[in-house]
Image (tube, rainbow, N blue to C red):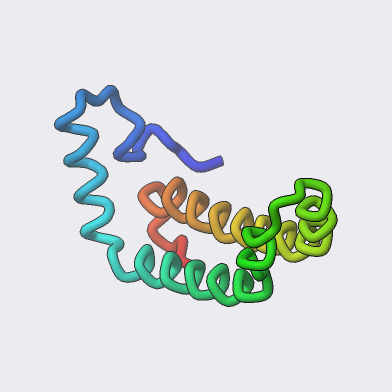
Length: 105
């Protein structure tokens, strides 16, 4: 098991030291964090193109609106699962990178 006592976010922080630790971590790992976030936003944006919300917004009858939303349930579920996957990868990187330097995307 990794020794998380060496993690920069492990110690007691006040607001200044927490922001300083976050800034230093972000500055040191800017490129991987930026690339992961950029890739995530592109994939989510592409997957969101399959959902036409204008069609739902033009409806005034709630029952018809619910019927139209049933069609979008599977694409929204897929987008949510992709988002969960990317968020898990990003959190794993943020937690384990300072402890284990060989951790990469």
